[in-house]
Length: 79
Image (tube, rainbow, N blue to C red):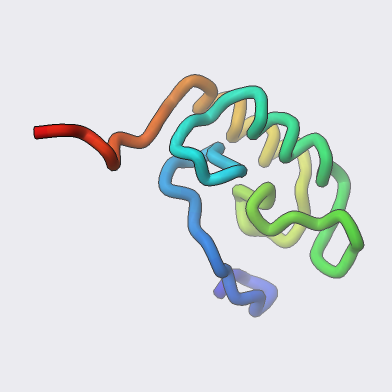
């Protein structure tokens, strides 16, 4: 649950990974861009793009993607 009482259905494995593909890239920037300026209850609000979990998609979410751009999660490492 976040501050507004919204149940989070999915969590980002790495900060900035909006589309949950274990890579922070241009598609994540686009995901934030599509929802930029929206807030909970508006038609284009994407909870996955609300990386700061403040119920709005804003410059802080965009900055989070930029800060982690190029990072990937390592869930599928072979041993």
